[in-house]
Image 1 (spheres, rainbow, N blue to C red):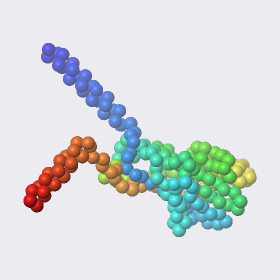
Image 2: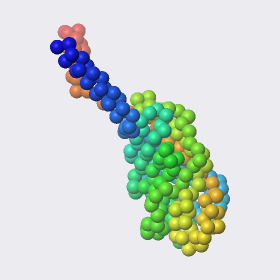
Image 3: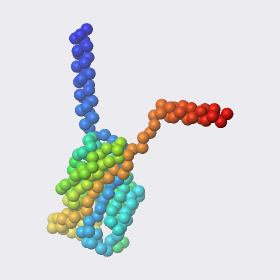
Image 4: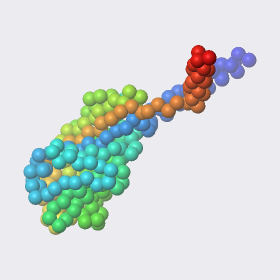
Length: 229
């Protein structure tokens, strides 16, 4: 009997260890979180003849050159958010309007593991590129991620175009895609990115909590009625 109990205890420990190991994997983060892309003065001054505008659920503040959009899904496995992965709406993002052309960047996602923004690049409605758009050499978490408390702030250093995105943008506008031009496009600081938790997850009362609230309210009503008699 003793040996049987020992084996059961060992099995329980093993299951607990496996469960703990599984918990390390990224899980859904439930607090509202904003994706904020701030365009650099380098890019806005370079494109003086162009205007930026938001698409779908995103918003664009021209005074601060900030594009903001709510993440539709976020996952991470620890407060340090080393494996943070956030996705926005496939139909939201921003437009670069230049002369008669519209360059759209939508379906934006961010990966902390690769410190990169990915998305879909289209010119006048025709998709030209899908994949990593911008990368940064650095990114840091200045506020740990906690859904219950509604905290979390992650920001990158300067963002630069990837080879694929630079080549696609040059080609889309009919410009040469030789190495010199691609490298020149890649050398321009595009801006910075931040993932900002905007509030805690609203608590949803359990059914038993509603029942207790109902009993409490009923008690108040009865007491009040007795006093009025």
